[in-house]
Amino acid sequence: MTTEETSIDLPVREIETCGLAYFRYQLKRQAIEAGEAGSGGFDPCKRLRDEAEGEEEIGEGGEGGSDDTTFRFPKKTLTPKDVKKMDYYELLGLGHLSATEVGPDLLKKAYRKALLLYHPDKTGRGDRDEVFIEVQKAYETLSDGRKKRAYDSEMNFDESIPTGREKGDFFKVYGPVFDRNARFAVKRPVPNLGREDSKIEDVYRFYDYWGRFESWRDFSLKAAEENDFHVEAAGSREEKRWMQKENDKLARAMKKEEYKRLATLVERARTADPRLKRAKELEKEKKEAIKAARTAAAREREVQRRKDAEEETKKKEEEEARLKEERARAKLVRDQAKKRMRSARSRFRALCSLLHRQEEEAVGEETAGRRVVSVEEEDFMFEHVDVMGMEEAVAALEGVPYVYQAEPDGPSPPPARVSPAGVARVTAIVERERQKRREAKREEETSKAASGLAHASAEKDGGEESSPKEAAWTEEELGVLAKAVVRFPAGTQKRWQCIADYLNHMVRGASLRSKEECIKQYQVVQAGVSKSRVVAATGGAGAGGGSEGRKSGKTGTSRGEDNGKAVASGDGWSQEQQKQLEAGLVTYPASMEKNERWKRISEGVQGKSKKECAERYKALRAAVAKKKEEAAGAKTQPLK
Image (cartoon, rainbow, N blue to C red):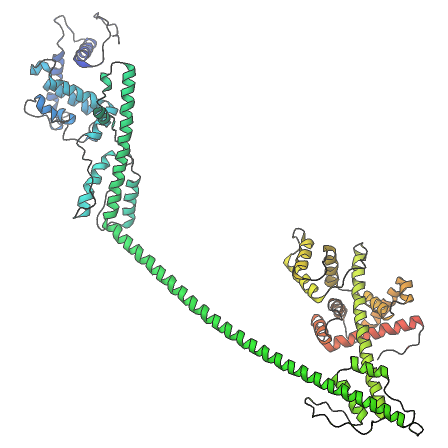
């Protein structure tokens, strides 16, 4: 370091910025700059004495009057032995203040006061006076921020913490400990431990703060003392760096132990805190109450579940018993019917044999040549006539009126002769049953033809040809198709493929349906079959696929339209009701049970009963048959 040029020439030399020589140099330099140096020489202590006297004079006045109370030096003369028992703040007259209250300006004033008291020129102990050296060391340490923090970290600090087994007031045991450690807090203000009646939220906030406590405590000075590595005494830069590295390593370990000590303090305080114990008990009681409520609710649910299960089991047993009884009654009815049928067939066969014998015995008499029951009629009776028809034929052959009895009497003895008049009645019974079968077959063919034409028309509208191998839609498939259309509404990605997959998944055992088939059938059910298509389809079925229908589709279509208009104009049927009837005929095929089919069809026709729908269908069929006969030029007996 070099001095600046002044009016008095001074020798330029390099000096260390420490020690008594440096201090004298600085005083002399300040005196030269202030113009106080004279020819009589420079007294370094004169200025300090003058400044001290000036401060005392100011203290006697007003502005500096507080200095006498601020600095508290011992009244007796200090010895080296006394200095070792004092800290740096006491040595500088600041022992009554806390470390945070001592600022740079106050420290500088205290140091000047101490120099006036302990300077070798005043004490006469020489430059090696231990008291004066210790005063310089105190000022050097406290004027450096890092050194001051390290010194404050170890000065008069009690690191002890409660063991957790103390008896007595919790707040008196742990409160001072937390207050001592709060001096090292980085984040302020530091919450206090509180009182017995503190809010539980404040208690949680206190422990949360100390659980994340950040300390500025510095262990560098303590580490240097324990290692005995004083950087200032290092002989080289390498040794200085090595000492600093070792000191820092030990300081980090000490800081880690410090945080561990604080964590132990907080954990022991949590365990012994009566407020947390009460909160824990309350929380435990609350949890037990919730658990008890849940257990009670679960118990009630279990009781209700068992009760429902018992009721369900009881209902199931009653239903099974009812079904078992119904099955037993049905079996009894079937057995009785079979028994009645066997009895009627046996009696009918015996009567037919007796009739043949009577015919053979009557050869040559007037009654010869009377008609008997043919073998064909006899076989038809056995194969197709029910028990009521069989009993009616037996009564006709026996010459007695037929009256149905739910529980017939025992078998009566066979008559001696058979009534020849009963043969005509047997023939009428056979013809009646044949007529029923023809009507059922014709109705089924009509329905199939209408359904096939609807498929063909839908494919024609779509520009596609009908596949000859496409199977008719069953009632189950139509029901699943209706559900699938609702399940996958318009806008669904790959809607019709999803509908086809759903249909094929739900209807097992049936032929797989493609998305094109689903679209066609949906169009038929949604829009209904036009009246012209129904009439054309019915005419084609009645003709049995005749040549007239095959020759000209155009002619058949015009005839169907004329018939549809003629029929739809009467009997109070609106066009909407006619469309609903046509759609029902397509949806519910003739293969269904007759009563159930017409019941379903009538449900879809607004304002019409089952009987009216059936009569409407018969009228349509009769009109189509009549038109067909007129077109073909045939003279056939119309259906009745």
